[in-house]
Length: 369
Image 1 (tube, rainbow, N blue to C red):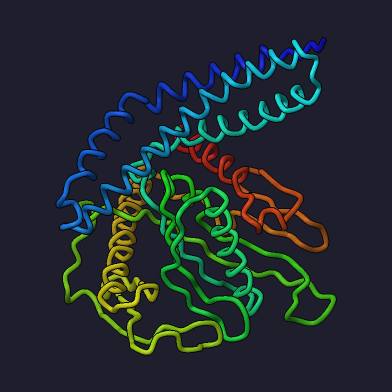
Image 2: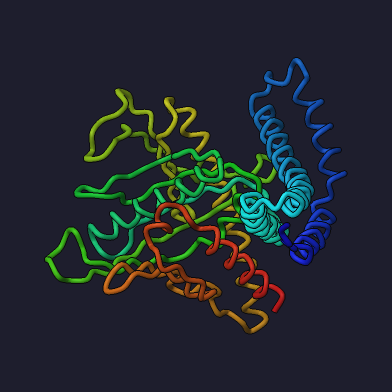
């Protein structure tokens, strides 16, 4: 007979899970789902496409959140039954399965515990990520594309919807810039800690053999706002340019000039879109991103003014927030949190949860301080 005793570990998980459930407020979630389900079931829902998408997206997010909480509760119960059976039957395979499930539950509950720290004004919104190649020539363009793939792989691993909105390819390799949306519960709050300057150190595949190359890429993360939150932009403040969408190497993709570039003349902000097939759709998508950037810019200016009045104008992120070193050793390290991973290949393949969790906790401490 086995003596598998995980009582303390399970008790600790249940205690943490009770605290999380209280914050998540399951009853409020269920009420929201009931209300949104009624709206989604109305025959005339799709007469207003924008509102229909808003309702169905909100319903999907809340259903996903509730399912996650209920799944954890069920898995905790199942784990206790599995341990009991393993002990009664003396089954080593069941005991090994129980230990594996305990580790998995610890990670799942830990991830959910981090999510409840996301209480910012727009943390629950979808995220729009823009990556731009910085200093470093061809290596920087290649690095920018590596980062884009990294975030898209992260979204794929979590079954989050990701939509590439615009890509500007570099001449030799990689990308000059790319913009994509990740639509998931708390996408902006989760991914906003990824904003900043990323640095890559490696033996360049494009330069002279035996020489290390340092290159940089900038990551911008903004929330995708609802129309009610959007900034009103006068038409005469915008210059609209249309052009033909292009793929790698400048190859033509569309036969019509459907891609759109909006320039906000007072600030110089530029947004390009070429994902949609029609010019009207691309313009609407570009306008939403531009409005989000302007709203965020307003908030940043207000925050900077408050800091200046308080005598504190120190930047919180610094010039570099993460280093990816491939030579002479292998290491990815966040320079704010000191969190690090010794396998860059896993990180570039989307294994970002550790960095994101550490970043969210770091940000929360900075706010409280």
